[in-house]
View 1: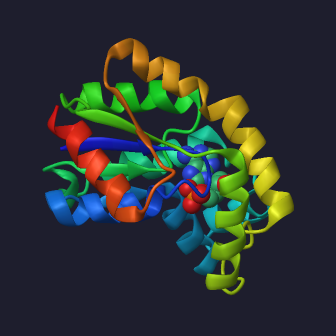
View 2 (view 1 turned 90 degrees about the horizontal axis):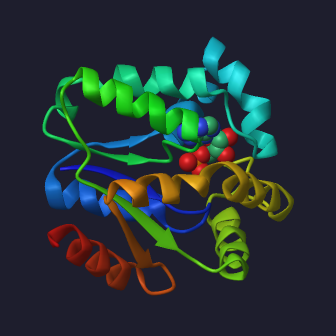
Length: 189
Ligand code: AMP
């Protein structure tokens, strides 16, 4: 199963991606997690990404495309993967198309989790308390920027994948179990 999970910040992408990891025994490929690990390890990439992520802006396409291209070559991604947080721009989606074409693989589904903006603000506030400051970008001001970036640069991807017929939208305004059941139904269709 090769899946992209999309949705605005706070929609529950990471949570649902982890459920898919269990269900299909495929790795979760989260560019956000990889970038946070790079910041933690103080690598050159981490240093480059740190300020950008703290502001809620996007790390350059070349950087994240490099991460994904390398990760797709890892043995554990051979049976499939769930991409969480990538692609976020049309350029990234095109780059992913090329990477997959080169490996002669294709996507099974793009899942979009839909959540109302007001609910996202509440969720991020909760996550900020839970993460106790481990994520510099979990605060309301930065969230507003992340939502704006999402609308401007990432939302156009929904139409991109809709045109190809592999977009499946699920209502994210429900419990974790209900959303995961809706995703399972969407993937079975
Ligand atoms: P996430 O954990 O997916 O919410 O990502 C956290 C932050 O990492 C984002 O706000 C961006 O600054 C950066 N990031 C993660 N994935 C990407 C991507 N595909 N393109 C650009 N920046 C990204």
